[in-house]
Length: 87
Image (tube, rainbow, N blue to C red; front, side, top):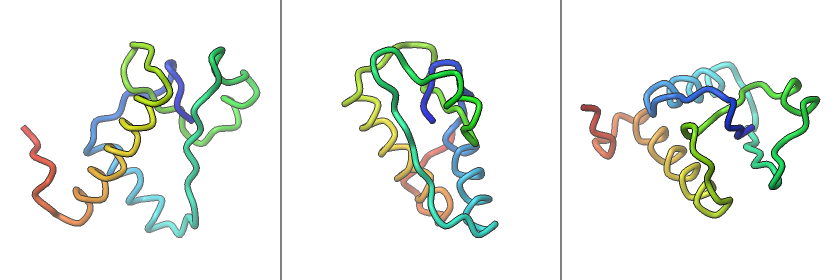
């Protein structure tokens, strides 16, 4: 669940987490972006992970693009592809 109060993971740490979920046999992963007022406290408590893209507020379309980039980057990291250049 994307939430401004969530963990701000590096690309490498997100890739590691996604790789662990994959290796543990997790069949699917869902990423939820909240409405203008965010997610309810109950929804946040039930989430496996609260993920933040920093402390800034991002419009939904940009947050979606950032999420897709991080998922692509995570896939590249896990595959050992040179797309991600850690520095």
